[in-house]
Length: 266
Image 1: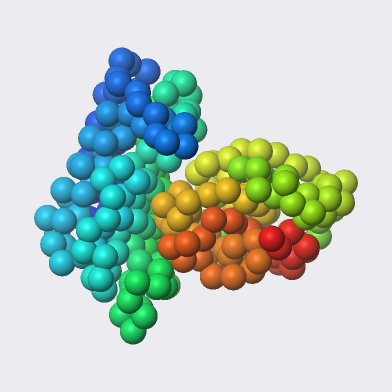
Image 2: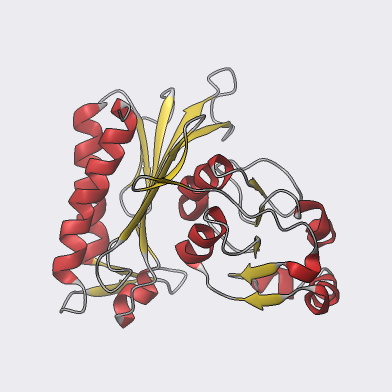
């Protein structure tokens, strides 16, 4: 039986899915933020639908959304939401985008520090798999799940057998550590760039073995952090540090390979 938190998150994702599927590959307004990233009226409508579900169930909780911003930030529980992670893909009409909903239990002894524990994650790709969609969810201590299938990371323990997927790498590419990535690549079985939710779903289900990104937002990865960890993997920043509200880099792996990428620390 799902917890009240998980039930709310899944219902919120379903509400956003309905909005997104109706608009996908249709006509919608696209605006551009200061950083030139796109935002659509669908992003905003989806986040409002998610927020309505979560606030109706837990009015005392905080909320941090990609489009509608922050509210009740001193609450013990904080919802972290990206209604369409991968808006560029959504705008271009290919299905590598997802709804990301996570729950953080805050450390009230350190208010305003960004510290807390991620305890729940829902990652839902509404138009993936030929439109059938794919939703993975996890709660701390309860595993990561795709339907009735409990997910498990791979047991690969050598670079020679490992597949690495990379996402946004602009900051890493400008750093001396770029050469370290170049040193590692010939040792790998293969390298891919699945990006966004895709490579984290593949990692959690044992189909790839590590993910590296140097330019992310916590809203992109909070839910996926819980999912990978509950599938038995390790999820840190590139320095091996914990994931928090200020995290901007990722090293995620099956755990057995984590140390092999330590040289990428920024």
